[in-house]
Length: 284
Image (cartoon, rainbow, N blue to C red):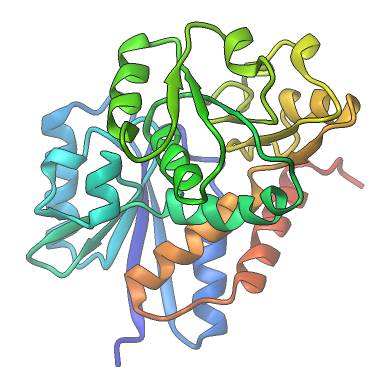
């Protein structure tokens, strides 16, 4: 049985990622070794990504995760796609068997696991999704799979909205909207799937005036855990979901794909929390 795995993450910026700690702690708890390498490359074009993926194939990687801004760009460079990744059109996990690179999407499975408890106690109604990029696509498919009410999708790039709405048409009630205000009008929940609020940004994708106690608010960003959006939503009395559980569950699903072993989400959660505490707690 294999007991050593080389994995990693391609994206930019990723120096803040908690993924190395989560994957390496999960491996140690299972009695195996994982080295999780951050591959931080800014502005990679198609040829750059192709070269990186060829390196993944040749250097013995079990696989890599992919994050902003390359989740969509890598799709056409892979040998095959799992059905979920093919439907979504975005990949955050690539599994290598040495000869073939296969794309998967654990953002979708991870978000579904993270949001399910909150949805179970929330009233059914329209949900506003802000962001139609790589993670936004995954979250849209996760919500559709959970049978929520109408999805209202907003993105500053109207073409992205149209593409995602088209992908979901026939699968789930969906409507592209032209403004944040239209997305949140009467919505029972809102999800931020953009990088807005991720450090160093201290902006919020939603004006505070649109938040109210009878809605829930989720953010895919986890650096910081309490984004300006979530802090404002909590102050208004809304139920909130930080990016913590999405990060943990998506990482756990990726770990299983890389190693064929099921990790402890408790171990991964402890590792995630330790990274967050060390990074954001004031010095003693």
